[in-house]
Image (tube, rainbow, N blue to C red; front, side, top):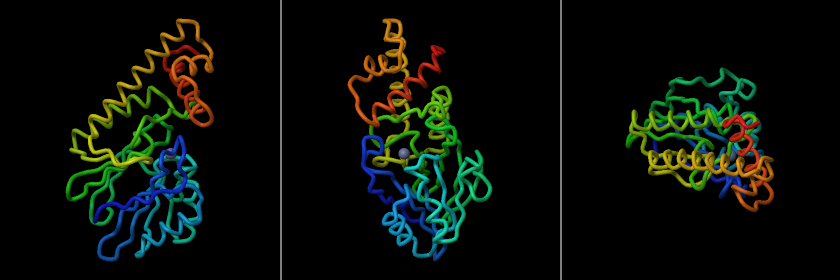
Amino acid sequence: MTEPLRLLVPNPGAMTLAGTNTWILPGVNGSEAVVIDPGPDSFPHLDRVRAACPDGISEIWITHGHDDHVGGALRLAEWVGCPIRAYDPAISMTDALRDGERGQVGGDAVLCVTLPGHTRDSIGFIVFLHDGPVMFCGDTILGRGTTQISWPDGNLALYLATLDKMERLTEQYGIRRLMPGHGPIVTDPIARIRAYRAHRLQRLDQIRIAYRAGHTSVPALVDAVYGDLVGPTQKAAEQTVRAQLEYLELM
Ligand SMILES: [Zn+2]
């Protein structure tokens, strides 16, 4: 296929960075495209997505069930008459996506790999482009900064195991780029995966130390470890702190 196309949803914010990335895997010779994460239910954005797929859309794939990724999927599916596929059977309109499932888009092979942690239902897609494989990884790794563990759906032990799995797959297949759900393309996948792991382990140390120093409530731990936060970033930090307390068996 030609290079995957990124359409940025106009929903910038502290949690969404510049906005959600909708990815389009173009078809070849008039075949239909696949759309990954149509984004929230934004009419103008979905209209742009449809216009960017002049030969139609065969399937909509969902990296995970957060509204900023899946909210517009049903509207787009109805417009173009295609199924939605996700790991979560409650979101899938046909068979749910499975770990290890193989397919084809635009003449290129695709491998589905589960990536639980940010959410339980997170799944990624390795697409074997002619210039090397890339992985669409949803919010498991972002183009900038770090991600959140959406406790209680998200789980830190699963997330750390997923980082190990991503590193293994990146080495095994020679994955060259990560195509995240937010932010720019990651061109140094192994370094980024390791930096994410180091960051998570460092945070666990900080939580342990703060907890022993008497900061045992979630708000106190957020203050001690994350500093002064407001709004959605504070809520995200609280969820991630709860995920860390669960991991450390301190709750
Ligand atoms: Zn997101």
